[in-house]
Image (cartoon, rainbow, N blue to C red):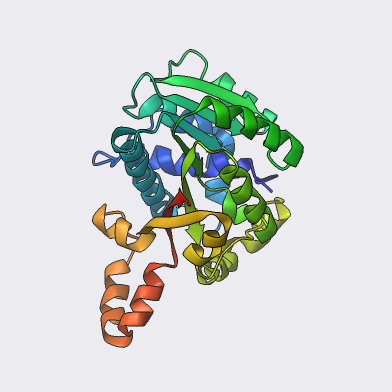
Length: 284
């Protein structure tokens, strides 16, 4: 197997960012993606069933998150971004962020070291810090959050591509831990529904389980799930809707839309729109 652990999925997604960057009509540019993905990333995408066909979803996710991050920094006074399980995210280098912004990437030591080595010689656009820790160690995580929480004034937390690999109880624990930082005002994440999980598992379940990276978390109602944990969902960006806006829809989606317009009720269409997306949570 080319996927040996969850960290390898970062290489997988980096290939998609590299694919988009290479397009003449690219909706974002990540000049570091191909370097960070490496041969291992290319091999993962090549060997995964429908590996390249699913690029649209990750490309859309990246673009939508870029937009929300820039909006929070520009219009909501965010002075610190805490990027948990950061993987091979290069936003601190590629986005037009203010030099005063404090960007913190947190990931496992091996992934942090790999990224540091491959970004050597590159200069971040803002104040950048990489912290190599295992977030599954609750004592270490709480100590880290206490330190970061007091050093920031207005923080945006990002968990891109993380929650789907966690058990529900782990997501609940993480939600409470993030909420324990008074400066953590917003939380940006991607979310998948149980329906999407079933669809993805038809193609990737065996490969991901053998690679110790099975999909797990998929709430029926993300807003209802996070509400009692101190978080209000203020934005939901449907992957399907945003992909159409950005002209990055999956192949033959136009045909499915025509079929859906005839066969689906309004309620069913709305349900389908929430099959996956990006959410922005605000602390309550």
